Every structure is written in structure tokens, then in C-alpha cells.
Length: 231
Image 1 (cartoon, rainbow, N blue to C red):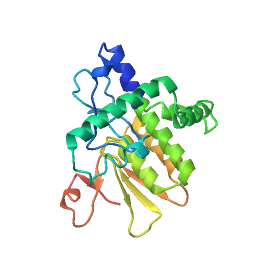
Image 2 (image 1 turned 90 degrees about the vertical axis):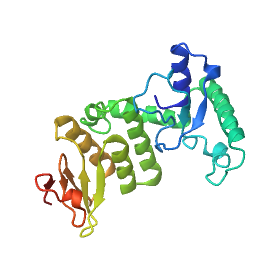
Image 3 (image 1 turned 90 degrees about the horizontal axis):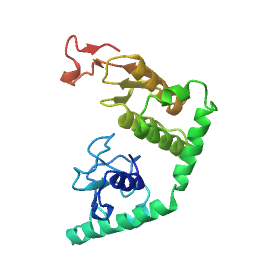
Image 4 (image 1 turned 45 degrees about the vertical axis):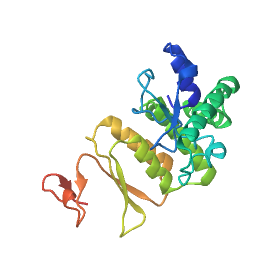
């Protein structure tokens, strides 16, 4: 689950009293997700004392002052207000249904399923779970709004490919080096191909290193024999 309304509905389905849910500001969160659960595919909420939220995902205009990093006074009051506001927002979410952004993502996903983005993409996007798919669609919308950017590709890699690291060559700015941090298998290859096709524009060229990192002078952990590749 990724959204406020999903958490509230899931809590109700799990027999919890939704009025007793407690929402709190997450210490770390993804810019592409509203909920910041301990696990990406978290489904069970009964064991969570606080449902951690990214208040800036949809409600920046509401929380920009309340959650400002320099705001240190009255912490308990601000925690209570944060919780109360999110309860009100949850009620409104349930009543109003889908946001405009969610509507755009549904239209985008429909076009993908119908093959308007190519015959391979429907199969490849199916390799990601629901949260991964939502992250992908958010990245595509962001790309439409701001234009292609390596920053979007880096964000997608960080959020969707665990342990991955993206480098840009000092010798040639068009060369992108990606350490996937996983054994090379068909599933990860198809995920990487999809991310590159969607978020890397010409004239950039991407080299992928899967299980073994390439050596970087001055960084000892990448220079171990039998644990590195040459590039």
C-alpha cells in the first residue's frame, strides 16, 4: 500500500478501529510514496504503533510550516496536530476518491496495457509489485512535467532496484555506469531494460554491472581481487 486512503481501508479490513490509528512524520521517506512503512510491501498494520507518512507527497501546502526542519517548539502539540490533520485528510480521501494525479496514472497505465508504449512494456512493468508500479508511473508523470533528466533515472534506480548505484563517467558525461548489486538473471535484466528505455535519453549510454562492482581507484572495497570487474 502507498496511499493514506489505502492504509485506512486496510486497517478497517483488519478489524482495527480506524479512529485509534496514529499518524506520524516519517524520519526517512521516498519522494514517490505517501506511506513510509518499515517494509515496502507492508500489508499488516496492527503491529505498527505509528503509521509513518510523507506529508509532502500530496499535502506540502498544508505541512510545509508545521513540519519545517527549523520548527522545534511544541513538539507534542505538532505531533498531535499532524495526527489530527491526517485523520481529517483520510476521511476526505475516502469520500473524494481518486486524486487528479492518481487519475492521470490510471490513464497512463491503461495506455501501457493497451500497448501504446510498445509491446514489451506491459510484460516488463508486470515484474514490479503494486508499489513499484506506482513509483514507475509517478516517475513517468514527473518526466512529462519536467522533461527527461538523469536525476529521474537515478531516483527510479534507487527506489526500484535494491542496492543499486548509478555513476556518471568523469571522462565522458554521456557514459552512465550502473552497479545493480544483484546476480544477473532474466527478471533483473528486464527491469533494467525497462528503466533505461523509459528514463534514459539519447545520447547517453548505460553500462550495467550486476553482481561485481567495477574497480574505482582510491576506494579499496571496490578493488578486491575476484570481487571486481574492469571497465
